[in-house]
Image (tube, rainbow, N blue to C red; front, side, top):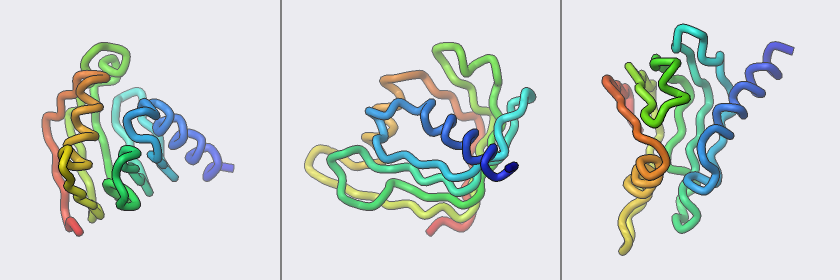
Length: 124
């Protein structure tokens, strides 16, 4: 039952991301973001925009997040820190740019995002 609740929370996180930006985003586990603005995400797979061929932009088994909770409902989401363990990152370039820049441009067009601290360990 607890696993199902975590999966439902994870799907809610994935649905919060505009489907037109990352149509194959899939998040398979989460401990949820607490009222304090902290939480863990497990098994996040961030899909590529439709015009790219690699299976996904990145996959991470374990990450933690701290954000300003009230910023979720504002024009600018403030993320205090993101800690990512062993991300699997696919970079795909092309004539029109690359998958990672396309995703970031799409997110920026949708909402302002401020990340104060980003740590990635064990990149693949």
